[in-house]
Image (cartoon, rainbow, N blue to C red; front, side, top):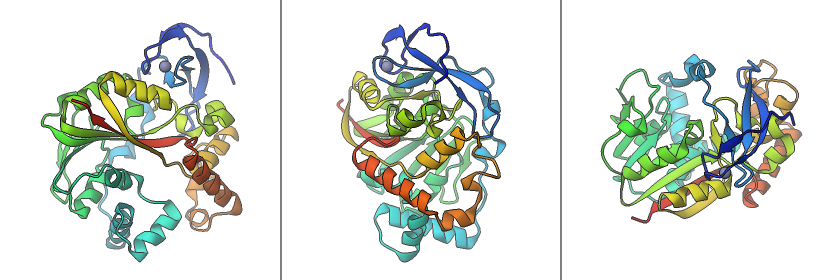
Length: 323
Ligand SMILES: [Zn+2]
């Protein structure tokens, strides 16, 4: 592992001040290969970037927030997949899930045990794809927020997508979700504090996020695909995330791990210097995805095993408010 000079720094997750172990990580999604200084907290094991990159927008592709209307067959397949992922058996949804796995965003909503009339906020909603799927499933009070939307919008189902930071969102909610958005925030404590202010009594916060310290991190180090420099600014360890939540009077309701084979093939590619966007990337071949090789199938089995032993690289954590 390449190391950078360690300086005394505060872990923005557990707040420990120490000379944490520094290392460099490269931008590999687009293959720019710019290097960034990160550290691994010596107290809680979380991984954080030292400084906010001044030109972070440069590292987000232009298509990241565009929303295209799906062709009818694709909309049908996505809806069937969402229904299957929510627990409603159907053949098309099961087929899609056999290739892509269940839709983890939809599964997290099912796990949170909210009702169709619950008020739900998706923080960092991107183009609103999850909100649109939840519209289809019959959820009635959905809101998405994302400061990088071009303007406020409405989904086809009539749900609001707001061009806002969480600090600018009003109202109260039964469920506030972070679907792979909290790791893009420099200061997670401030973000969680605002999420808590938006909760109804007994409300819940769900966080789907990469988890530091796992098997893939130990195996691949800075080539671990979910490190995703420089977009991921903070990747908590399990212990770090629980400490952060406890500091905001949030109680752990459930945690489950949800990684798939991407943890391995993505990290192997980074180790071999192959960016995710490269034509040589496994993700570029639909045929390979539909007919996975024995190597990919073995990665999938290992990811499932690590999910069960809670040592894979991503989890969904659901907290309830104590107050
Ligand atoms: Zn820490």
